[in-house]
Image (tube, rainbow, N blue to C red; front, side):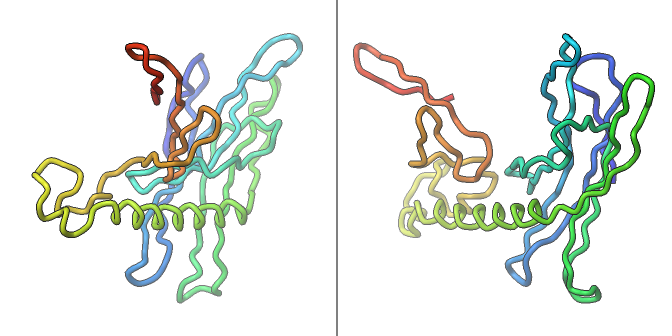
Length: 207
């Protein structure tokens, strides 16, 4: 499938991004997710001027969490459009699991395109599986924060209810600190901790 989106600024044409759904795991351990290729823009100097280049990244989401799996395109490549192809290793196949990105490289001022480039995303596919394993581990960790007894006596509207505590939980900040960064256990968006004072007492604020 294709997702079309506009560049975040400027008069550039729309960018076509790859979008697929995939199911990982077996039996009760199956997890359905979406994989998307989207460009991440950074300014690069070119003949004294700054021009933005779109480096293609692979993103993983389950409609609750989202993680940047990492770059797909080369360092100096400017990507115009992309597609994703996924083949599972289940029954009816040769057992070989593959994830492939196909993207269009932008040309210079005299060339509209440099053609299509296929890339086998072996490392990125393994990273996807590692992230899914982390999500499962953190879900279990968060679920254990509320004992079954606490869920029975806790008032409605609080975190510890009879409902699944991880349902709709986007992120989880626990004890994973590094300098001024409070890392999301689900590998999503981290929080920045800023030191401050409140009524003469040292305090920290997470953003």
